[in-house]
Image 1 (cartoon, rainbow, N blue to C red):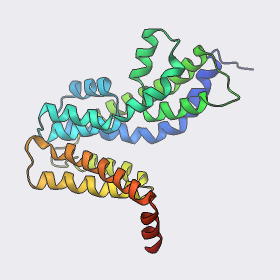
Image 2 (image 1 turned 90 degrees about the horizontal axis):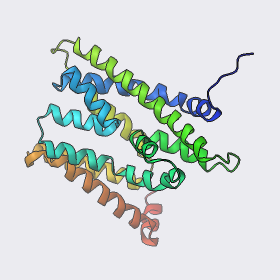
Image 3 (image 1 turned 45 degrees about the vertical axis):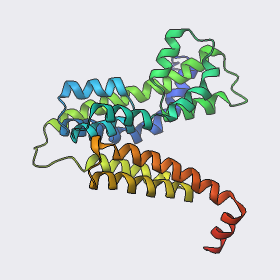
Length: 247
């Protein structure tokens, strides 16, 4: 009978992340094709994917590159979109405290939504009782699998995108992907308010030609503020009353 030489937590990590890999494959293809469509050379597109390795912010950067936005705006947009990684890092850091610095650096590089969610669930499983080495193996199996599939799909998208005639255009791909990410995430009224306000401000910024393409940043900030205010208002007795009266 065949027995794998891979450590048990590596096998577990690959098995747990496998269903998610199917979902990120088309996302990576679009990111690669959109990068070529935005005017990046294949080498630049691959470099961007390897350095950034973050789906949403990578696509946002590509979109801004395509619209000739200022570099500062591109960087700020990436920072704003990835602010959630600070919370992920603070939450998962205690599990990596005993690792050497090089392992901590590698773990930080492959931190994604999926790697964080699966790893925290594994670490907090009362029956798991993992030692530091097993936690590292599980996390890197998940994060490494995501990285490999993402890069391969991005390169494939770059190769395919480079062969698509310019007349076809791929500019619709990026906003289409963002919509596919946004719609399932709108699961409550505060989130709906945040999406509506943030999107409206960002569109208004484009319509009124806000300098340096800062409309996108303003839209993100306005959406966060509106979502927080809506959540607070709906949690008050008057808000609950009004919400109930609306049905």
